[in-house]
Structures are given as structure tokens and as C-alpha cells.
Length: 276
Image 1 (cartoon, rainbow, N blue to C red):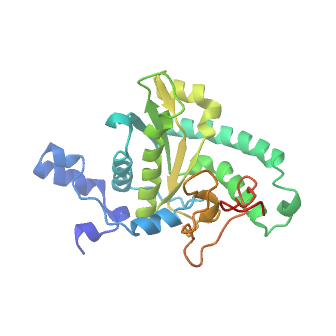
Image 2: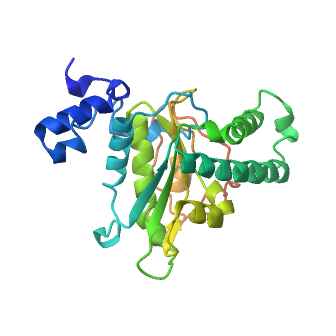
Image 3: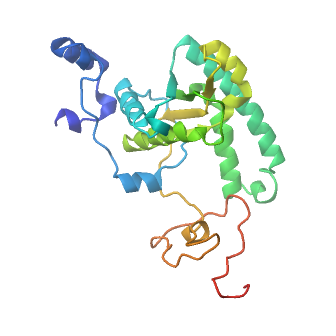
């Protein structure tokens, strides 16, 4: 099996350093091509779920390197590339940061679980989607400190905050999650960090002009990826004008839909027709 065909999880940093010593300093930082994908692009886009349960398997540096390389290829305004990534694995500051975020996650989820009634209605049925979601979220926050990798994506601001500034950091976050999927890993994007923003800044030395844009968790899935369920394409795509029906906006055969999300609007009337 060639080096490109090997499982990135099986490659060692020792081999990378050795190769770097033989071929120069530039090779020390990479020493291998990008690992081979395990899925195609469209398959990855349509099957990347939010993974909140992980095994205890650490994520090798080479896999992290590939994910973050993909993240840094994302577009940004004027190609300024203002995104930065703080990677937290198993060092002392990483452990302290995970504890801070984990405590915040448990507080926030506890309030949301009660406010949103996750344990009432269908949530009282142990096999309902609502109950399964609540169990997965509870496990996620209860075991937060054990998550192999936590990444804090940041935006170095170069002007006053604007509603569109996220366009220069969130595409990089999606690239990171898709790259994780391609390499057999999984992740989830959360905002648990916002509840302890000041404490994290102090602990990790984040500058005042830098926005900590979220929390990304990464690891080897304890479950699996699979087709994601969303609302029908026709509800989300308009043609010509707001509410205009796009007759071609059809889901592929076998697509499953979700009832989650905000209340669905009434089906828009076709132009020239009265209300239905």
C-alpha cells in the first residue's frame, strides 16, 4: 500500500519528522501529501451529520493537519484570511479550557432542556426522536471534557463588527467539518464558548480585537454519519421572486425529511393562482 493509501490514523509523527530531517525544514511541517478521502464531495456534503458522541481514540496530528489545511482554504472577504484556530487536545490549558466550556455547556443545555420541553410530550416516550435527541445532548455535555479535540475558530477583526463578518470565518468551519468527514472523523459546531468568553480569553490569551466564533468538537464517531434530514427543497428555494415556485426544485428519490426547525410556512401559491 502506498503512503497516500495508508490510513492517516496509522501514520506517526516520528516518521514525518524523520522525513523532514532528510529533505529539509519545509518538509518537517508536512512530509506527506494530503491523505486520501474516504467519501466523494457530494456524498460528504449530504451525509455530514453533527457528531456528538466520540470514542476515546486520539486524533493523529497528521489528520488534524489535513483538516486544518482544508479549513484554511476557505474563502474570505478580499482574501484577508482573518480566521485563526486554537486547537485544544490534552495540554494543561486545553484541559482547563475544556472544563470551562463543559461547565457552560451543562448549564446552557439544562436550561434549554427545561425551556423547550424536551422531557414532555413525545419526549416522555423513550424511543421518540425528541427523547433520543435529549439523551444524545445530555451525553455530549456530560462527557465534554473527554472529547479528543476541541477547536475554537476565531476571527481577527480588521474593522468594527458587521452583520456579514461571519462570512470570513464560518466557511472555514464548514470546510473543517467536511474534511473531518472525509477522513473518517466527525464533529459538531456549538456556541457553548459564548457563556464563558471572558474566562477563555484570559486563559488562552485571546486578543480583545479577536472574536471567538464558536466551539468545534472533533473525534472518531461512536455512532455513524449518514444522510441528513432537512426540509423539502421546494420549501427553501424560490424562483424569480420571494415565494415563487421553482418546479425543478425536487429532492432526489428516497430523500427523507425532518419535522424539526421552526414552524413551516403555508405552501406558497403559484403565480396567477389564488390562495390554497
